[in-house]
Image (tube, rainbow, N blue to C red; front, side, top):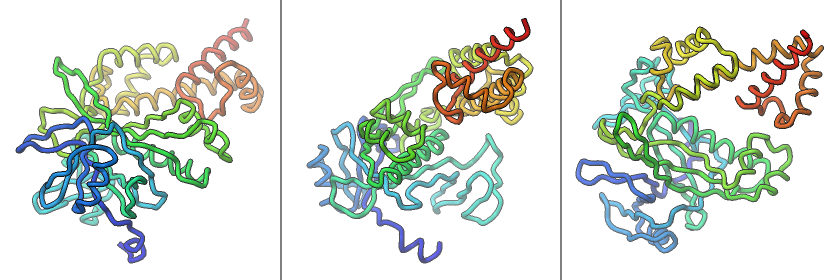
Length: 357
């Protein structure tokens, strides 16, 4: 690491944890557990957010009773990282981005879908009500954490840059459960919420539409479905990305494909691409692959819409001007999601038939 990066690194005061160990068994908690080597800092945490400070592994710990903690996400680079990592008793053995192993300085040798490494996301935050300069680190494992925690950080940092001030946010621990194969699995979800009035964000110069739409539904819950920060036993699936999607999601995908005139052959090809050749059946699609499936479906629907639009209007500009007059399609095109493109498809399909008649 270059010297200048070392100089800019903020000191770590403590860690925000999602669970604890009871013997060799990991146990999830209803609220965050904070650990630090500085007892006085945790006493301040206890006074503000509840809980009793106790010794823990040459450090100190407190499991707070408050449901959430006010946080500030620093604008410094490197406060969020995401890697595939493999650890042993001797420390980290691999650290790669899916292509290059940065730890061993060689190409990643993991097989996609059969990785020995686990995705690990690390987020450093300030606790503004605790008067310390250092940061608190939240680390989480799980295949959903990387994209969603990273997206949350980028959204908040972008708003801070446009507002030219810190954005009020908080961190809470949401308890979730999932029933798969007749078994109930419990897991903890760290949630970042933006605690800002919608008007304040709307008045930000050149605020991105994606951020504005999110804030309008305040408080904004940006979640990352991740397990505890300690590795659970294999049978306790806190990360459900490798589970086959539930039957209701299978039906939703099938119905959506029919609505968008995506035939069976196209759907099978999509699933084959999304699963990297593992299967072409919707019944064997994993939860971690579902977002990619929706993305592929949306891209296909956009292509179908483009063909219809070219048949109806003389130019893309004319098409968008006409579509923007339709209720529900007033937002910019780059902000349209599946439901918007489905509306575009229905409108264009009906209009094209009128032209044919």
